[in-house]
Image 1 (spheres, rainbow, N blue to C red):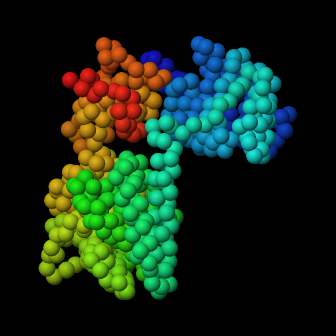
Image 2 (image 1 turned 120 degrees about the vertical axis):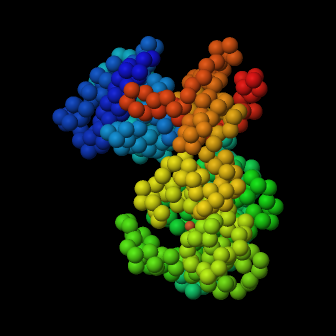
Image 3 (image 1 turned 180 degrees about the vertical axis):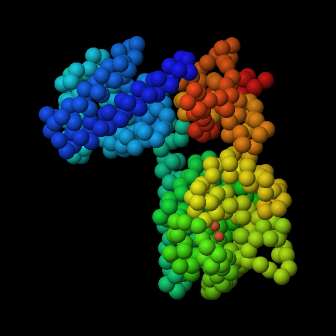
Length: 470
Ligand SMILES: [Fe+2]
Ligand SMILES: [Fe+2]
């Protein structure tokens, strides 16, 4: 497909999605004779018939949270994102993974589909209800499946550990605020499960840290820092005992924020000098809060130190101001990196506009030796951002590729050159026909042709790396 025909089909896809979403929305409030309904219906029918593939089919398919039209991913753009999200939600609500329209598609067929689609939402088994309403029509549907790279169980467990940790943190902060004692035994259990999860499913857990819920920011942030710190600690072979200390200290690093007024914490615009002065008190407050815990053991002492030091730079600058430079300690050095990275990629505190993960990493790399521990940041960048040679990666085009060369420009760490080994339809490409693509390549509209979605275990596909890489 040429660049311009790709751009054309994207424009048609958007038109299709905007019209089908519009049709469902208007049909929910008006009857079929309504002018607005009839207009959207005829526009949808026209573009759907135009988009019928060579096999006489038009398919809308959900892959994870991406919408594909005839095997091509619909790219996000401002003028279709809302409608695309609407369709994804409505399909998921009804458990639908795929809708196929057969050519030619008449008005009546579309009408039948829309009314059955709307009616099905009230059914306890929407997929089955819709299927039977569509029996004998030119439209068929199939069930939604989670992407099969991870077993649903491991995803579920990862999600459960994550949200358990978030609700624990929320509870702890509320208790501290109310002047109640907190239960550290529970913190231990929460962190033990995070350590287990990071050990077995590091990428899933790191993936969870992209959750930056604005309302629950402080709680999610504490859990994100905990996961990133544990993962970094694991990469440098810390003992399980130390990983647990690291996890607990991370969960409590911002505990001092309980005494910062919520108006300041949740202020949507930049802080003034006075507000900054108040914000900068949270490390000292954190130290005091943790020292008030009844049971002072090694872990609570280390957590208190981390809470006090997590805004100090590697070279001793930062806050709170201290008369002499404090000694370095590994836990604080690790948590400082995890904390900054998570804060930079969320739209809070350090930056009102979040940086992309790769941008945040390259900014942190520039701070190596001044703000952050230079050895640890390299390990961290490798862990989060770089796809090392030989990684098998899934791209948003549904192709699988092997990373064989990374760009030295730190801004392009996530856009290596890859050999495509499995095509969009899941077929293996023989070695003799394999080809290389550069993920920095863009299309006519300036969007990247391919982007990495995540790494995948090559063993699952029986791929022999050396065969491709040597
Ligand atoms: Fe902080
Ligand atoms: Fe923080």
